[in-house]
Amino acid sequence: MQLGVCSSGARHPSYPLRTINYERGYFMRERRLTALVILCVTVAATLLISTQFLSAQNGVGQEGKKGDRDEPPPFYNPYPPGILPPDLTQEIERVRSEVRSIENEALAQWQALTPPTLTNQPPILANTGMRANQLLGKLMNFDEHMSPFENRACGFCHMPYAGFSGPIPSVNLTMIAYPGSFQFRAGKRTAQRYTYSPNFPVLNFNAAQNAFFGGNFWDSRATGYLLGSPDANQAQGPPVDTQEHALPDTACIAFRLQTAAYRPLFETVWGAGSLDIKFPHNTEEICETPGGAAVFGTNTMPIRLSPEDRNKANNVFQRLFVEIRRLPA
Image (cartoon, rainbow, N blue to C red; front, side):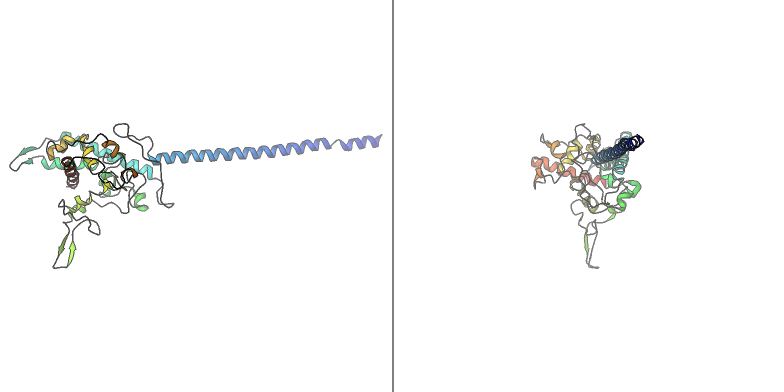
């Protein structure tokens, strides 16, 4: 009987052992499942943060002055790792805020200005005429509407506190060139400083020294022959450069000025009717499409204007940069 009891007792522990092994396996599976859930949550959170970051890079949620501006296209980063600084989006918005502040300041200064007196023969704007010219240059220089997505002004790359050059330290230390209206397209050069570029003469050849002098840029390609100023000449490039403002047609400048708050000042300086141009119904659609888009092909003047209106638009385009060069004066 004792043998039976002992034999029976020897078999009893097998059940608790199986239970313990089962429970151990259960807890191990539970731990694996918990670790898997934590991993999935971490990945999901990372993807969510990345999506929000890219949305911020794209400027999602920003609208134009009419509230119906198309948003910039999906984010595309063609650069090698480390080229775009990590604070780029925040810094862009910081500078844009400063640009808008300066634009509002210029609007207030213009509103407070005593109108100049049109007098003399040939006619001139006497008394406050020079100040009116300077304020017009300031208003156009810091006007963000001079770009397809209404998010870039000339002054974005030429801020006063940075010597009228690039104001973002991280950009100056990495990508050098500043991102344009279509983020993150950028050119190849740092922005010229307004403090010296207006002082260069028209490109000329000095026979005594057998050398060329004047012009803007290292290669003097902005000769200044047309406008009498290399500085004004070089400033004609950015508004229609696909890496900068990216307007598809120079006539977009006149089109945007037609609805500018400071249009009366422009017409005071350049004459009544100087912005009376008959634009076709699809002009806004064209001007909010970045230059270089496939829809334009090789057409650099997609806005169909009469010869008379095209000539007016060209004059407005040239006057823009004649005014901007007066700004630092």
